[in-house]
Image (cartoon, rainbow, N blue to C red; front, side, top):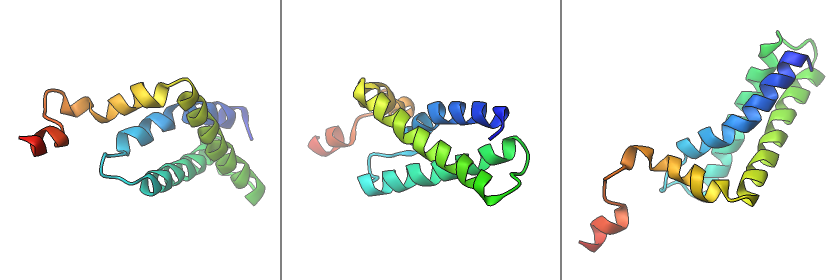
Length: 109
């Protein structure tokens, strides 16, 4: 893994949990959210592999992909441990819904 790939991995690991939370909807099940996160992580790993040029061998590809996937899992767990996912990341889902009634409010009317 090159230095530029390592930097791209660190940036990806810190940004992707936020992006996955933006993609996630209230109607998405936990299993669908996990698969979405995994697919986005793998795609980010492939993109990270291309950052330093096309990896020369399969081992370099695996290193890039697993570094991003594993790093994202660690970052998400760290974010969750300090409450970031419960408050900040979940608030991102409602960024476009400010002032709109929630689903439960509409049903109760």
